[in-house]
Length: 300
Image 1 (tube, helix red, strand yellow):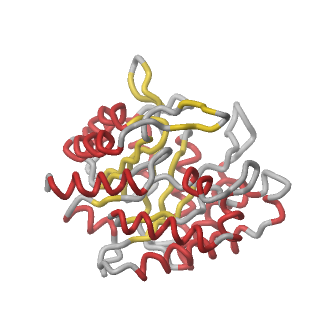
Image 2 (image 1 turned 90 degrees about the vertical axis):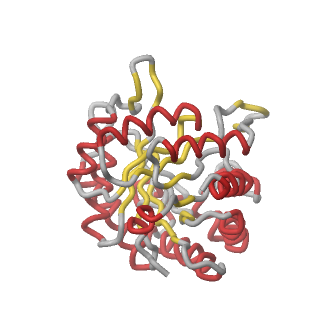
């Protein structure tokens, strides 16, 4: 098996998995539970989610470690009782076991790193040194557990994304993907902190990201224009994972209404616009990934 995803995306379009949060909620996680901790107490349910994505055609599955950095875990009283090294190692081992047991050559495990939930000045007091130390510990643990790549995602501030890439680059030599979350505004695409696509690309390339892209916030339709902006500014591989439409709140829960087939059609357009890998974020499930797999296979 070729473990270098960056080499693989130059040979063919790679299909990522979809949402994790909604899947573990459906599997029984209650409000207030820490997703990473809940899943480790219910390993068979997390393994079943990974297996469902693999069966649907995903070639990359993500560890359930989105909120697994020390800074993020220790931001709550319950999380402060957890050992970040143990949380990340066990989650990685479960994902790796699921991928290795699946009968296919090209399956990758991405060590997932999300934002700390803290803010840089002037909004908050987070500094780069603190952020890098937290991300480095997480990336090192994931890499030592055997993941094939590091996926940094849902970053809303380029400063935190840069810190995460720097940390991952210090911790390991495996490929690093950096995905930023953008909003579509009247004047174009910007992060929540006002970062432009041009700024994002320039700074992430400078610190050594192997692939760039975006996830979350945007629908598959709205993300299409963002792909073109990225492709105009970089020759690096591009990875995009949009949401399944805009959520509606029903009984206190976010509900996504997009049809999987419509989502798959948009992913095909995203690929044609220059993406090398695609998948799903909030609201997507194995049903969405199966539809994308069938659509991308049929269209070559």
